[in-house]
Image (cartoon, rainbow, N blue to C red):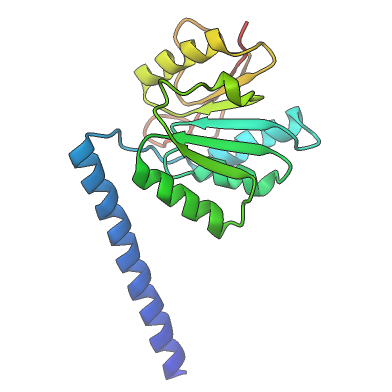
Length: 194
C-alpha cells in the first residue's frame, strides 16, 4: 500500500512538473515572438460543435479546418469522435503545433494533422473544407471571417466560437448554457458563404 502511495505521489509530481514546463515554454515563446495567446476551447463548445457536425454529416465524412488551432483541443477531439473525417489545424506558433501533435497522438487520432503556417496567407480553399472553425479575438474573427466568406464556396460552413463576423448574418446560432465572455463559452455562430 505504501509503494502505491509513493507511485501516486511520483506521478503527481512529474505531472505537475510537466505542466509547469508546458506553461513556461508557451509563455517564453509568446514573449519573444510576440505571439497571440491561444484561447483554449471549452469542453461544452467541443460537444456543441460535434453535435452540429453529426447532424450536418450523419455519415461522419467531412473536411474540417481549424484556423488558429492553438494546442489542437477541438481538432483532436473531433478527429477522435469522427474517424472518417479529415481534419487539419493551421497554427503559426511552433510550440502550439508540437503540443497539438502530441495531443492527437495521445488520443490516437490518426485523421488529423497540424500545419505550421500563417493563417492570413494560408490557402484554405485549396484544402476543400466542408467546415472551417475559427476562435480568434473579436477583430481577428471579423477579418478572417470576411476573408473566408469571400474565398470559400457556398457549400462550406464557417463556425465561429463566441465572436461574430461583422457585416455577416449567421445562418444558425447555437446558444450554450453559461454563454458569455467571462465563461469562455459560445454562442456558436454558423455562417455560409454566398
